[in-house]
Image (cartoon, rainbow over all chains, first blue to last red; front, side):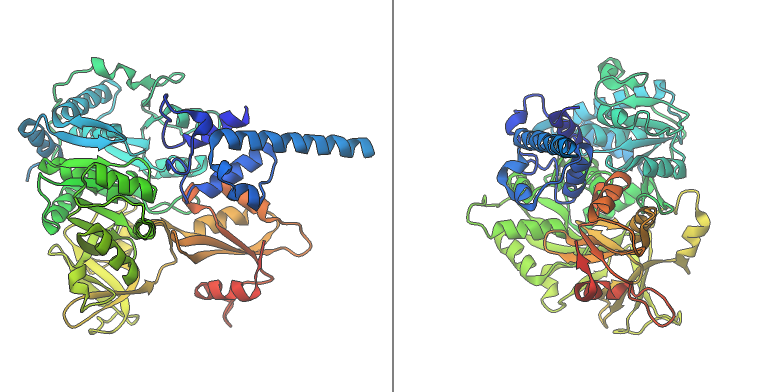
Length: 92
Length: 508
């Protein structure tokens, strides 16, 4: 499953997004799809599914709240992970 | 006494064209809502839902949910509404405790639980939005009859809602609320706040809790309009109140704290429609009350109650000038006694456990009559809260006897979190406790004592919780300790934990 699909599935656990919604620029916090109670579970589920860890700076960045940009961040971190694993593999 | 659903249908024939519910920029008139309730009733009968059957429903705030509550009442069936983010094992145990036979759920829920959990349901499984595998689909709802099916056995004494006091791993206590419970509670609050058909009543808390259920039912029983917010942020709340000309609402104190904070910003809409706001769940600080009264320009009440008893006491802020920190006087339906540790009745000013006798009392814990009897003393429900009465009969809250964390107005039972975390082999001991928080009032904090020489990371604990607990049960703070604070008898001193972890803990 792509990061974008995973995020959309998690966001819609309580409410289905309107078909008209522009997903790429959708702010899931301002629209209340994730609230201050649900944010931790959302983040940890995402980290676990993709074996990544967000830094405090990444979480604090305004782009983190936007579905499209969050999906890109996840994909970037997954690629970095893979590159670093591949790099480690060569050394050993 | 008229039955709950009869009252709604009376209003529908009296005010057919009036807006019954506004939700998420859509409206439904009384006539349309009555037709929807009839179609749902017809559909459910054809799906095999019988009188007294229990239907599990991961519930969100929507017109469909409101219509399904009324349809269940119409049929003499019961709903077991749950938080859709509950983990599968918790859902299974809650549904088993409440004898759930049928399921109504969104496609997202059916997809997420497929192959993960066998709910072992014997009745119908219905997809609320579209179709999914072998489930029945509400897609055909428009073909159903809009003539009201009347189930003659319905007397009002049937269970309508079973709501859970405990979330996941702990033994759930299913609170049994009959149709008459729901009706009498709604009517008591309509009288208390002088609500009329002119009111526009906002519900902005989740419908799987009894507060929002009451806020939605109240207007529908008197021909007023229900404003149902699907999701809450303080900005969405203020815009909704302004645009929908809301006149009355009950909110949890954590929401009001966030709203008050936003009201200090210069860019907020001016609110002039509100007549009265009520704060529930825990006492608001005076500066927050003042900010709200000043900016929202309306009456302000606070209430104290429990799910078992409904509202016990109420106070108008104007009275609190002389009664600072009181949660008010008992409703006409309720009587309060303070019981001291030696089981004697406390004198005014003496602290003890708050107990309450009320005509609004729930029907008990479903299938657990002994446990409910154990929570009663001489017909007074032992709330587990500490408090005292003054000479004039005003109640003052003085803390909780039972261990409970209230985060954003939702009750979290520490043992649910502890049992989940203890399953990690590296955990020697752990304790979940309330930690003060500006936004949510309290957040769940977790103190962990790992087994020496094991590797236990904060991340591993977070993943364990994310997978096995609901969203509101997630620990916001995780602290590692060498040992938990205990008294000389080896009993955990939980009340001491917030201070203890600040001194001795390692925040990871």
